[in-house]
Image (cartoon, rainbow, N blue to C red; front, side, top):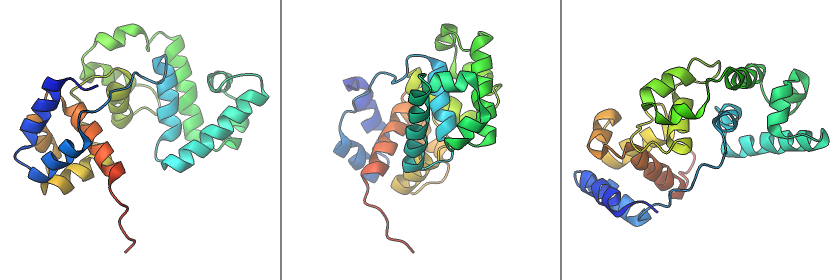
Length: 205
């Protein structure tokens, strides 16, 4: 569960924006779950496959990946390590993503994804990750937030977090809007995602 001092800091920073403060209070202290993947490469595989996809589309592709892995007596990681382009394309993975998955496998083999990354500042770690084909700033931010549990990343490239913060504050410069929430800007982003997910769907225009 989110530490009480961190929660209190977020509420204090949100006082300038009553709608945002009320939304954070409604969610209450967040539960911060452990990273779902055991190693960084596995997290990167997930992020690359899920890039630019809706939750439903990503789930459908992962179901096909898991079925193909089971049929081959392997695992999703095993499929990515084998790197059969035709098989991966049949699962719904684009050619660019196939090449990105292979680049992650190569980066891990080269020792670029070792445990020392956990102790590097986010900017330094992101620079290393963004040197891998298919890994950009958004993916590096997601890895920092959800895999390394870095508490103070503001994901400027995330449409959902940025849009929700603008809606709740009426502002446009989200870097400045998020600044008072340091050193817990990652937690602010988690709240914004939770708030957006809980909001009723807007009617089509």
